[in-house]
Length: 257
Ligand code: MN
Image (cartoon, rainbow, N blue to C red; front, side, top):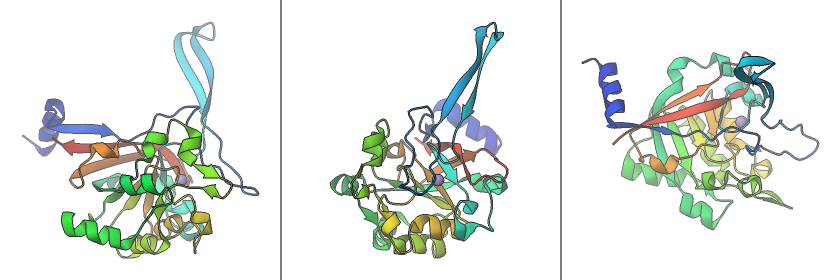
């Protein structure tokens, strides 16, 4: 059999499981909330055009409105000023939308400290057990935050000092952007940066360094707990919005069982 026939046979038999890493997209999907004077994105919303009625007797359809950065979504380089001359989301080569993924699990640490930051040493330590980060692949950063995504307040976890959600240090973001072979980073939180990253130097270092290095971000992933530390293949499929800075995306993982 051919490689693709082998793949289909394995999917059909359950030898390869397809795990959906995408959060359901609805009016309840939590969104990033920036403080004044910054502009904020719109929630997902929809208006019904017809539902088997006089407006369209045999068909149901809606219009919808959404920000580019709502729910599980893809950050393209042009999203950040450091990547302003880079790819928009329609220009990301299809070849880069499928690649290997590793999962680094810091859910215990993030449960103990919602401001937990991933550091280069954490990754180096992980590599001694699991091997090097994958060339052209994703680092999927598990924090357990997907369990909060049904509740906007829990998910954003903000108080009078701002949002408190896990992320990575500026040094770690710089290292991943400049020294690692990765394609990008995927997170369970509302953005790739930590909740407190507005106060980092530079601010929002994950966005600043990775998008500036022609790498990508994936946010609000779920089900990372179902993936092995190494060996999964991720398919990330944003809409090719012309000149778009990002897009809601369906993100799937293939896992050998
Ligand atoms: Mn984004």
